[in-house]
Image (cartoon, rainbow, N blue to C red; front, side, top):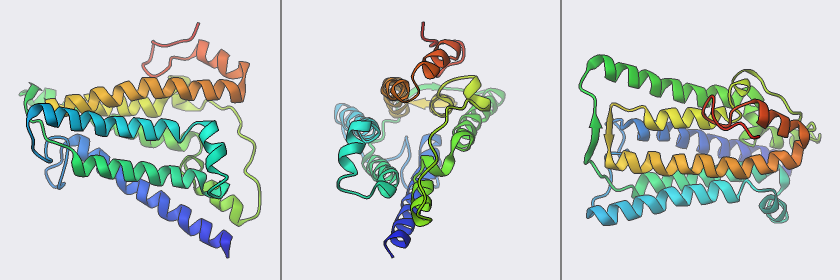
Length: 245
């Protein structure tokens, strides 16, 4: 019964994260149908709005980084079942994103606005490419393991997860972190950049580069010289930049 319960909980965590990811895409795009988005939220003075938004982005970065570290996982799995560790990580991410969506403060002051229809179409196409890059990249390694379903399914079948193998399929031959590349493109490819959008894009970009540093340290520990050689051969997030000497 516990194995069935774990699988159900992991599935619920997966769908909670999936809903938060879909909302994040609309949030960044500023879809008017959404109750809140990057240019629509709570109102306050400019200094207060900037401070709150920076705290919200920082909350996401701290949660996302700390819960992904091996030391935290080791302690966390003494409290929660190992089969649900990744699922709860995804659930925590969904909760933090929900907090960001609810308490985001609008800062509509324009930084740039592209009036050309051709220019706007190109930027929206780049935005879509960024989102697609994120989605495709999750499937290149192991989509269901990344979001905690594979662990719960293996536990349900009473089988251990296969030992992780180092692979570099498709986009991973272009950059070491194609998921981060996709987010980078989606965050900045907008025809209408407001102050609020600029804060979100800047804060998330800082997280992408800082968080990827912690992640690479873990991967070096896991795969050793194989990953070090990969770092020397392939760019980090931006193609052509970030090879490790």
